[in-house]
Length: 204
Image (cartoon, rainbow, N blue to C red; front, side, top):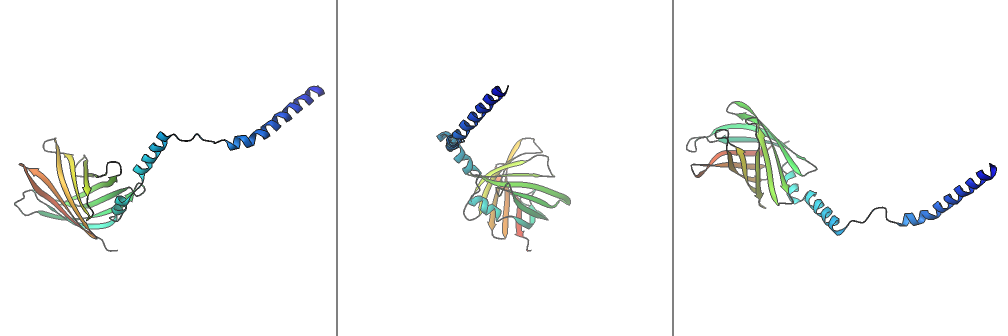
């Protein structure tokens, strides 16, 4: 029994010594398989798509609290109705998307809206979503902005009267602490102005 135990001890000591000798060789080997050219290209593309750029930096400059005056035209030939409201903007998704919460009144009724605005690095297009308590749907928009702060978006939404999809155009002009947003729709084959929002950044 003693001889057998001695042999086992010697075997275990030999295995331990071999394991110690093998450690430097194992440490020298790479722990992870190197990425292939295809995998690296995919990783680079994903990083480029996800990294905020100058468009997102400009978008973040619009964050804060704003007050606005809204004008609505039911009949282009008649004077518009007018209301006032406020908006609070903040950057979300790590500075990639701007969220805007709006409160005001519409025809004497409380109004609440929520929008998201972002820039897609992949498509090179600006995008926006809008929903409010006057509807149960959402308007999806895409557009472009120039270096002077003028943006033109085209949105699509379900018309409550016909149930069909309808498009509208919004032209926004950003000038420091003031903004002008104009909404246009097609009526009888003509483009008419239906809404105007004039924003002013709230002074702290």
